[in-house]
Amino acid sequence: MKFFIDTANLSEIKEAHELGILDGVTTNPSLVAKENVEFHDRIKEIAAVVPGSVSAEVISLEAEEMIREGKELAAIAENITVKVPMTVDGLKAVHALTEAGIQTNVTLIFSAAQALLAARAGATYVSPFLGRLDDIGHDGLNLVTDVRTIFDTHGLDTQIIAASVRHPIHVNEAAKRGAHIATIPLKVIKQLTQHPLTDKGIEQFLSDWNK
Ligand code: E4P
Image 1 (cartoon, helix red, strand yellow):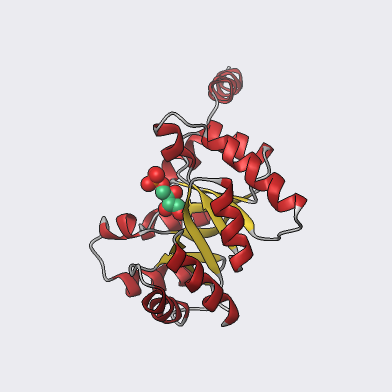
Image 2 (cartoon, helix red, strand yellow; image 1 turned 90 degrees about the vertical axis):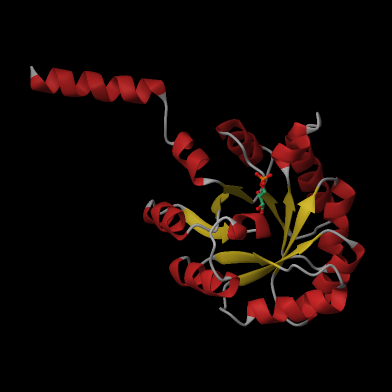
């Protein structure tokens, strides 16, 4: 499973990139709004730091406008993936953008049927939102299992990005259940590096060395 970072904050992206584990970036309108920067400029800056896929989301809800916005975003850099919400118009836009050779990430996926539709429309990636499903008493991780089973059964090569990741268990389980990618906030990436026995071991080694 690959790691993407889920943020529009450039210093967080640079920090994760330095770890050598970063294969891409996902942003969304809420994450970009927090940064108080011009959207296209920030996407360009991110795409220059990370060579892998950088998801930039369209704002329009109407297919023609989504396609126009998507083409504009894709022109910013070669590694831009156009993020499109899971709606009827979104599917139309994914189909047209795919025909134009542009990579797409269908976001706000909350059911296996939504993921299957997005894959059939030609999506490069689908993003099931784990944390937001957990928040309403569902099991977000089961969705990853279902989507992976369906994609494998039907020979679909759309990649699954485990999104709305809130803690390390989401990451471990998404990897076991066959997500191709997890997009993770920096805080959770750092949590993944930690274990109390690692800290205790370092402390013991240093104290023995100093004796
Ligand atoms: C994914 O691409 C989204 O940007 C993100 O994972 C949403 O996560 P949230 O539910 O924590 O906002």
